[in-house]
Length: 241
Image (cartoon, rainbow, N blue to C red; front, side):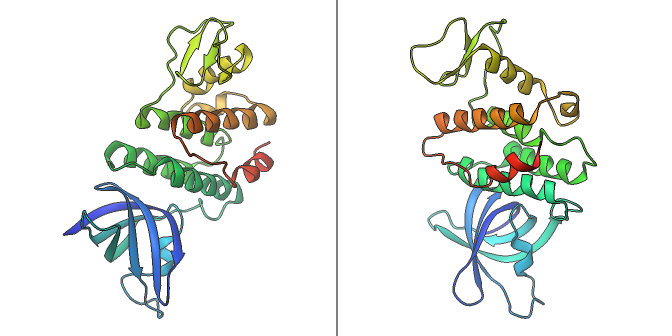
């Protein structure tokens, strides 16, 4: 049936002559894959440049539950980025987020609040004039709530460890190796208190920021089996000193 939905492009690859395979996260149907026929002239309703990673689009698509690939009939830009693709630091963050979401949203079949969180976060980054060096930390941490494995801050006291498997603080190290010692456990609580409006007030060194994103990705790998190492992480390590 024909469905109208907003969508965030996760990935697009050329397929044959004049076609794209587009992986997208939609508000109405969750994650879907589409076949998109793009005219060579660029004058039709479907233009290749629309389907860049993290593009926010409005789609009219023929979505059929039993099919793996769906067809896009119409596409238009729902939100036009002003700086996200022009600023090298923001672009590095965007490429990291696109790669991350491509793995983190593998099984998500519901859009709604999860879609709005991702779309709103990208729009916030696009409009930010500065103070966004911790954006990826806040984005990853707050997304855990929507994916169902948000860390529990209850029970924290100085000297606690953090159990990465249970997502809880504990007074002593657990018997397995997936935990953070007290110094790093305290930084988990720090990141959980951040939001986009206030994160510039929390000072992290280059080394602390890099270590914390590694911890967060390790947390995702524990709770999302098969979650891989991200190639785009190396660029962030260099840029956000």
